[in-house]
Image 1 (tube, rainbow, N blue to C red):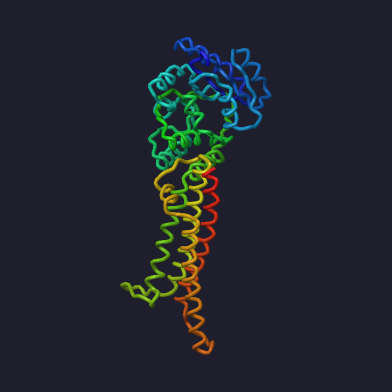
Image 2 (cartoon, rainbow, N blue to C red):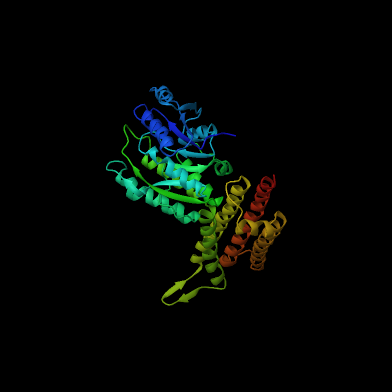
Length: 379
């Protein structure tokens, strides 16, 4: 057991100009808030003497072997000894005098508290216009929409959390997407999340944030953590849109108002149906993978999959589709033989048979792969 109340963890890569101020502000905040605390600087390979400055200021310096924003935090938090942890950038853009407010919010019963810049005050030149009015609001909006949250600043670098809750998240990303992973995983674990408005200050020196590269990494991470939105729903839509013309035009062309609809739409429908099924199956596999690896919680979809989907049932459904497709193919061969193998026009039946056969094959192999993921989940 430790007698500490809070550990403040700072990642550091060549922050000689600001690291002392950050450490000293954090230490003063302990006195102001009557907290027993420690400051940990997780150095990520500084070459400008940041380590020595941090030590002189009163911090405990630990070394992160792997480069990366997430790597520095994972390493620093692993060395933290208090039950409440506050994280914040070491570029002096965040006021560590706010530590007592964040700790107080945690003590109210919240698991994760975000220091919101957008609900607080952003000083001139502290945040680029593109980040403030475009990048951050869009990425935060996407995160809120995908994971059912209502936070205002999902990419704030200052946060507080209970150590017990953090350990349950098992965070893994080593780069800038670590910030998104924390909130996404916390939302999926149904942790209690709150926000505290803060003032955001201009930084000294050059920012290590790459607008487009890091923005894309955050967006990519959010999408990949939501296979239902990225794969399952679009795949299901394509399957439905594909089978409508396949079924409607199976017996011949249709006239809808001024439009003459013929087999050309069946070709498009066949492609959409097969593509959609592949996307849908990838989504089910992705969802199962995330659950098997502890990156997503079980939900109604996963429970339905476990209750109704098995390798044997998948193989049976796939074989039925495949047999139907092969049956239509043999029927076309039979008709061809009746015409002494002369030219015939059975394109409609051919497209139906092709779509059924390929779809059945997709279902068979996807069932086998899902069974492999199920073995991992049972482990």
